Amino acid sequence: GLENKHSIGGVISFSYSDFHPHDIATILDGESIAVRAGHHCAQPLMEKLGVSATTRASFYVYNDTSDIDKLFNGLQKVRSVLT
Image (cartoon, rainbow, N blue to C red; front, side, top):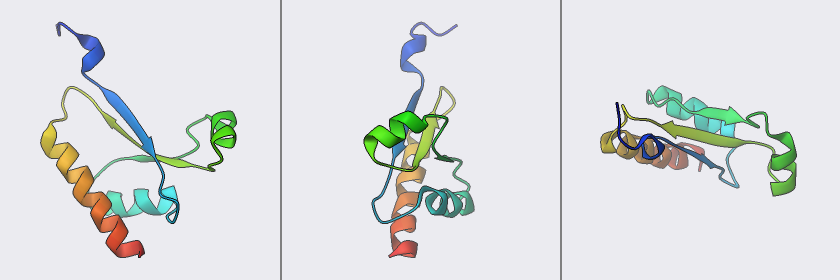
């Protein structure tokens, strides 16, 4: 097995003030990038943070830096499409 299972995955939740998370997820889906959009069963936290929803990307042992680059490029496309 893996020696340090605590360093093999991660989750990033983010929001753009001008773009709805569902719009972001739809555009990224068109680029074959799988993310989740919504409140992620954390409505009290979302309310406390003052956001209605976020976009969430998850990484695991099978992801590599090319996947991070693909997400970054996909987010650039989101900005170009929605602005």
